[in-house]
Image 1 (cartoon, rainbow, N blue to C red):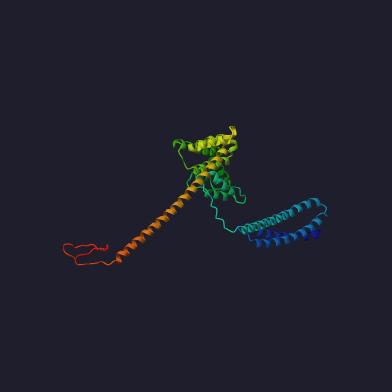
Image 2 (image 1 turned 120 degrees about the vertical axis):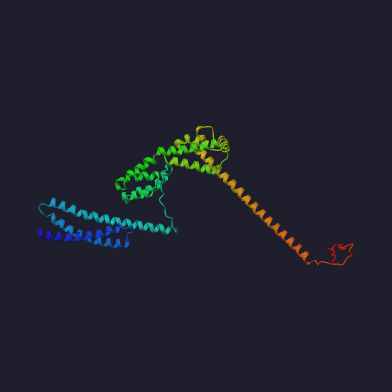
Amino acid sequence: MTMDLTLLKTQRKSFRTSFTVCAKKIDDELLKEAPELTQLSILKSQISDKFARLETCQTEITNLILKTEDAKQAYEEDFLSAEKYRDNYIELCSQIEQLYLKDSSTKDFSEWRKFKLPKIELKKFDGDAKNYVTFWSQFRKIHEDSSIPNEDKFQYLLQAVVPKSKAARVVESFPATADNYQKAISQLQERFGRNDLLVQIYVRDLLTMVMKNAATGRSKTDLPALYDELEAKIRALESLGRTQEKYGDFQSPLVESCLPEEVLVAWERSRNHSFTESKESRTLEQLMNFLRQEVKGEEMVNLARTGFASNQSSRRKELHNDQVKQSESTTASALVSVTNSPTKVREVSPLNPVRAWPDGGGPYFDL
């Protein structure tokens, strides 16, 4: 029995070597940027065959080990050794299957979409805190990608900041190593991405709009542009957790102070007409809805005016062209009439060199 066990272990060693070589080929193919699925399919069939033969040999060895005197210890050592190959085989097969699923879903999606999307360029951050939210929403995909090493993420971070800017100085203050990547990210967030800092920036922007409105005497302004600017700042505050439900009582007076006098009067008239006098009659949501309706109304009025002016302009142009054509026709007829009428010459008395024809014809000319 000892002789049989030795021979089986020798045979298993060959099977394990063959299995390891095939597994190395699969690992190399998986590490490529674009693995070839056909090659992976062939390698998967090969390693499945090698693992099946290895498992058959391993089963025979296990049965013989259990018949020996020190079976318990020998079995545990041999089991742990064999388990490493099982785990490696399952992991490789799982990775190949994931590639199959990814390729299949990509093909299905590409068949459904008949157009080519433009390439997304990484937005560069210049150190302006107002641009940090937009920058981080895009760079977060790289930051949370576990398949990218930290040293590569650091290089992407260096490319994602504007050269010689405040953000670049913060990032470049750290050596570009894997250990320093998280430190650089933390420092960027501390300098430019703190919620309290961003909230103050957007609130101060609203206050600046209030002061500007007061300086101009609440004169009439471009309402659609004002609405878009207000909506952008309110959405930015909402993304930072300052929602309308929690902070509307604070934001609503600021927004009202940004409005021109005529819009503010219309808002008060609308509120008094539509809402009861309660604490819910002056919410930020209702104010923004009112402004949205005002913007829609103004755009419809501008559209009607533009269309009417365009039609009037077209009509005037047509009338002008008709008048020009009629004038040209009249002038041409007059020229033809003068050209075709003969010039009549007649000898006359020196005392009366020019006479008119009795029938109103052309004058006589004295020769």
